[in-house]
Length: 362
Image 1 (cartoon, one colour):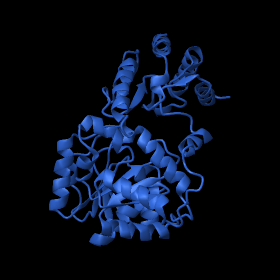
Image 2: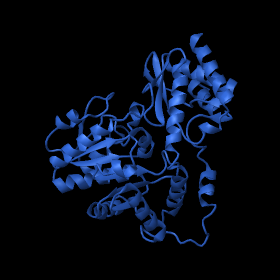
Image 3: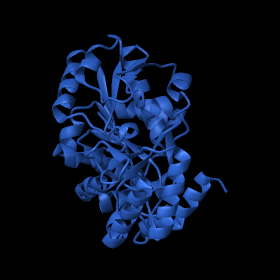
Image 4: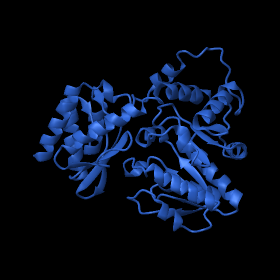
């Protein structure tokens, strides 16, 4: 067993884990269905109350005219950008260099839709108004990810969002929200979801990332946009005969967790402070602006994996099941706070960080 495998094994065997909600197993589905009447009718190819009622509910929640449920966010976002490109007859969109579409989707947007991409700002920065003003004038749509996962969940300030939205509308550029985790950003902004979403022409929300459902996504916008998105959903094979297992679990965990984001945010700030108190460890950002942050460790990946595995075995607290190299001397992992953290005894947390600090100093 190599050190990465040993780290994952040590993490999986801990009694408590700091990140996430709970293990993703069949219990997640069983819990969501425990109060569902067994005679409830399934949706059929995108129709029926099982799906349509949820879509209407989510449209109202996001402050948009209509919404549609997709089996995946990857599908939803590529379709959203395709619609905006077709509307303007210019197959060009702009987003962050570390956007999910750029680094995790095997160039699906380019290969499937022939869309060219403009990368705004450098990979370590948050997009600002000047970045948007400096882009090619024939861009059809700008995509903003809030929070920006690959740089530790960082966020632009709300005034910047307002300025970018105003500029795009003045220049007939559509603005799309990659809001996979947008609920987690609301406590930092101190704004309602409607106040944020009204700045955007279209909105994507993941139903499994921060919310913790099985899978699926919501895409919301005006009636014409959603009508077009349903055509593209069918073209992409997204109209499965039934999606109700995803829909019912999405609805259950949405209701369970949508009002807990402020608690996750406060926990993240406290936990980041504990990481920053350890020698050779810093968080990005130093003070989290959502429930998410990255932990940067000034040791090589293999050495860090060994340290973390030992800390987890000795404390019974899971810090991380992986580390990723930044360079030959530094590495990092991601932390995302949810329902699991409040269940960890504080004395166990304190023990884990005492051991971590000691091993980092050794």
